[in-house]
Length: 350
Image 1 (cartoon, helix red, strand yellow):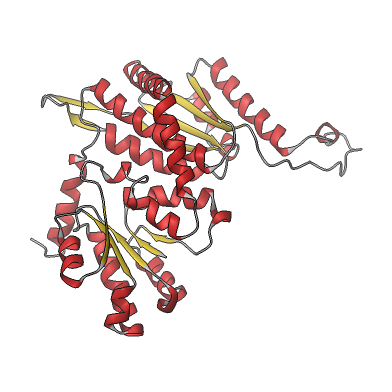
Image 2 (image 1 turned 180 degrees about the vertical axis):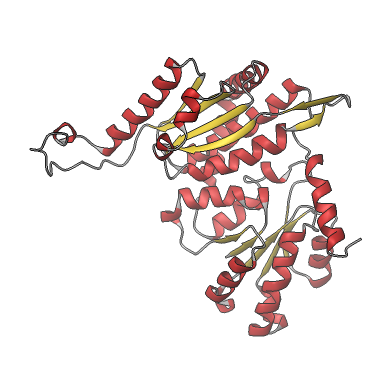
């Protein structure tokens, strides 16, 4: 499957795909940019004979997926003919309006709906994310069950996180650093950064008063970025707060006793990489705390689809609650629109 989308239409599915790549039964290619080099490389790799295109845009007029769609449909039509090419198209868009909806209705294309009351960055648990993931072998029922569990049992955690975000920001900590101690979960950080930035960075409150609120999100990989960013975090400006993400149950990999007879090597004998990662996480947190920097720790018992569903719902709700504490609308994105309009003008749309 080739998914054509951008922002919230792509990041959620990419997050789950990359975390559970071993579970995929089909290739899931997600093209979320219009870099011609990347488009050229994808076009060389895919085979229209055995590929489905899922183009995603709630408005139906987002320039990036529309341009991608025009390109890849043309490729498919040249290879397969119009009738066969159209059979390989699935459109995910608004149920009633927009250019993609009109196209789907007029040509009788397979289509799915983006719920009217759900914005793109909150849409991974709608057909936007569920359809391509399910198609490619992910058991999305478990993902949804995790989200439901969090909805029923974890609202207090979401509210607590929102209150901490709000209080830290008002104490001058206007940068939120996500320190993620799991390669598999790193894409979660990218998804959350969009959710955080687009929902909470606002110029006006709900009463039209200019407030210019919103912390800046920064993504750090544990343990890699201990060696590239922590110097700044511990001794630089005290304008940040830190959210650490740690997975308790990890793959059990032993560090061998090779060269254990030499000084500086023996202390690792019999240790496991999970112990090493946990020690480095704890060491970094304590070093920041010793410097008076605020730290929050999220512990995930193990990485599975249910846990991922819980994380998605937790941070969607936390973001929404934080927006209401700021007295802003966390579900719109007016600051994004001007750049889109200018780009379309440069392309001759207006």
